[in-house]
Image (cartoon, rainbow, N blue to C red; front, side, top):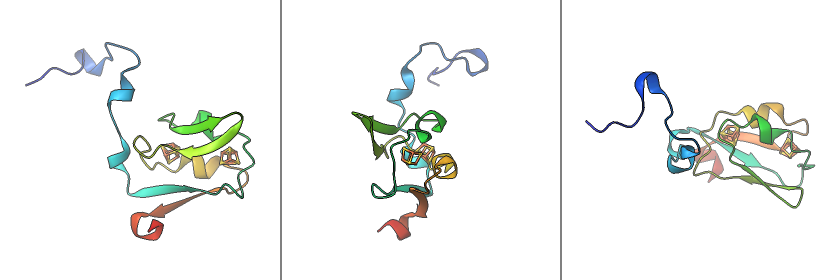
Amino acid sequence: MKKETGLGGTILKDGNSIKFKTGSWKSRYPVHSRDLCKSCMLCIPYCPENCIKEKDGVCMGMDLDYCKGCGVCAKVCPFHAIEMKTKNEVK
Ligand code: SF4
Ligand code: SF4
């Protein structure tokens, strides 16, 4: 068996989360509305995967390769600019 963590699940090397795409975990998808978003950036520090992107002070939405669909961003957005949807609802 391949050893991937230390005793008790200790993380042995920092910055390794980039290697583990958690996007396949989700059953719901955050749908970001650029029309409603005010780029207040409140959602960014709440995202446990740090997968909400910003560029030049503008919120650019989520990197779905890492978003695990927890819905925290939708919960904290004061402008209701993020809506959680199922895969079928997104299509
Ligand atoms: S919390 Fe809402 S309004 Fe603020 S940046 Fe995130 S999506 Fe945009
Ligand atoms: S659903 Fe969760 S993991 Fe995905 S962008 Fe929102 S806070 Fe981050």
